[in-house]
Image 1 (spheres, one colour):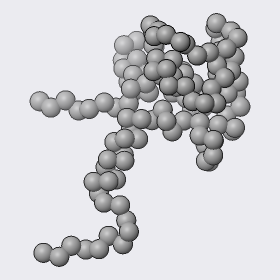
Image 2 (cartoon, rainbow, N blue to C red):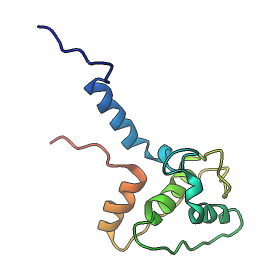
Image 3 (cartoon, helix red, strand yellow):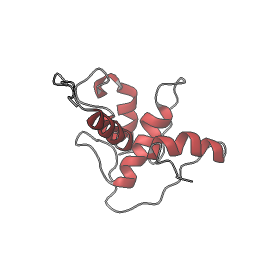
Length: 127
């Protein structure tokens, strides 16, 4: 049986592999140097990160849906827990493993919002 030419398009398997990688490595897509969502557009976020070098506690108070939970809290927590800081990072850098808490209103909030933001969707369990 003849197969249709792909006209230079990626295969379905390549698309699925790329999608899976992006889901599991979401942190790598945050605050790029160039792109429509480049970090220079997130002035307040960058100021909050930089303040981490000086202050033990900070408050990032902002409107809904501007990236407080995922783009600031979960992002920074991921950096500290993995020790994978981007070259541009001006905040505190831990030099040893740390213990940390991710807290929410209740267990469901932690699971559905914070855990998802920090760890991604995970794998489906097979019955």
